[in-house]
Length: 151
Image (cartoon, rainbow, N blue to C red; front, side, top):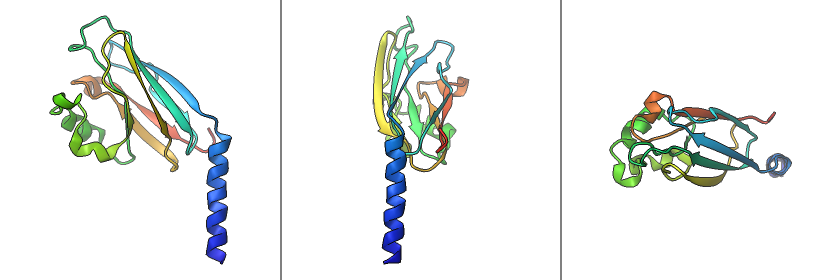
C-alpha cells in the first residue's frame, strides 16, 4: 500500500511538471560557417518541443546540407558522427546507432526546412545535438539541450 502511494505521488509530480511546461517551439538555422544559430537550448523535463531546422544556404545540397540530431545521454557524439559518415545512403544516419537518437530532422538542402516534435527526456542533464553531414560536426556544428526543472 505504501509503495503504491509513493508511486502515485511520483506520477502526479511528473504529470504536474509536464502540464506546467507549455510546448516550446525553436527555430534553428544551419549556417554556411558550419554552426547552428543556437548552440544551447534549455527545456523542462517532459516538455513537448518542436525544433524547426532551416537551411538558408545557396550552395548545392551535395555541398551544404544540414540535419539536427539529438543524442541520448552518454552517447559519444564523435563515434556517432564517425558511424554516420558511412551512411550516405541513409542521409548520414547510422542505422547501427539508431538506439542512441532521441529525435532528428531529415537532411535539408539550401532553401528547405524540416521539423521534429518530441518530448524532452524526463531526466535532467545535458544532451548533445549535432549535424552529421560530412565534416560538419568536426568543424563545430553541435550544441547542447539542457533539461532542467528550473527552466
